[in-house]
Length: 370
Image (cartoon, rainbow, N blue to C red):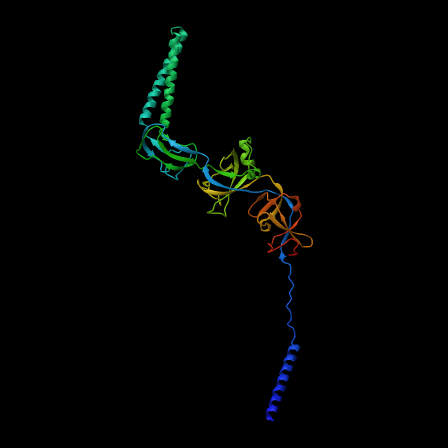
């Protein structure tokens, strides 16, 4: 009897638990779905327009002297004096004595030539008088003329040799190399040193065919006197001091295409490269300095200017239409610089483009414009 009651209780408990489980499962609410909408990306845009621009042309080169002189002895003798400025890096003035060769024998030769010339001059004057009186033949008269001419030529040579005992230069300059020293005996043609002018320097700037078309190089028949006023400005910078610039001008084009590089060289001129005139805030550019150059042509061109941040892989931009839909459009860059690319396609005049790169963007995507 008791076993039947226990079995009945177990069955009742089983049905009750099943019923509770069913009620709990049916009353459980479905979890709320977290549905979020994808918003269009935000971009910054600008409107392009055609404008007149001066396109800078970039190049590079090395500062070199406009005038450089290899000093050679024109006479033989012992060096008896050397200027303290005649050392590598020494700065000298025009006409300042740099080297003096012993002048004794040349001074003697000059005095002898001067005396001989005076003698021949007297003989010539006497022959003129005698010839006028009819007591001298034509051949004797011509002999006196020839003797005087020879004496005058000998005097000029002796005077020139005496002058050449002192080495001077016709420009303000600097010594690059010293090859002779005090007490050294030199012969005609011996190298004494190398100097260059500090008044002007030049920089050869290689340009491609496309660069040449925008650089505004002076023509070969330009007036030399007007070159500095009319020629294209060039700004120079160095890696050592990139914040400072030094201005020069394009003096000429070499007019020959290099057979190996296919480049044309423009030659820029720089005044007072060492800043020896002590102009304030002027960058000195010693000979041999490697410089970056930016050529600023006088002529301007009509182009659509595009910020570099808006250009994708140097060939595309993102156009935004009135409905804020984007379209990737190919461009043909005519030139580029550090900040902009330049095109001359009339289609882009007035177009709105994105300055913001769009990740995984596709044509027709909608964006939000700031």
